[in-house]
Length: 124
Image (cartoon, rainbow, N blue to C red; front, side, top):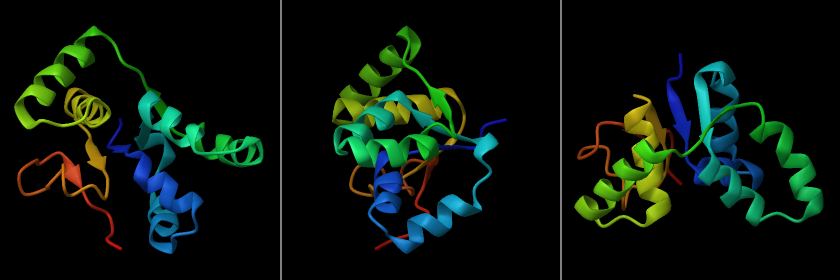
């Protein structure tokens, strides 16, 4: 059973050598952790071919959550309600629909006091 959805910022921190991110990822059970197709694309966009080759085993170690009409409808409603950018609205929609915590450092959009599905695993 899934417990967490990783936001791209957590994985990007790890790939950039942020120790707190690496420690957090190492402590996770990959079988209970997911990555969205959005984060997958965001991460790959910022990598060259060598970086992509190195990152793919990590990215592929997590379950991949896709987007369907239900997720799109939920994301649209969340975007209207909170004014989030579409990728953030999709992340939130997937976390809510799959009943998992969204692990992120994006407290500007995802204040855990306001959004109980949000987990801030570390701060920089």
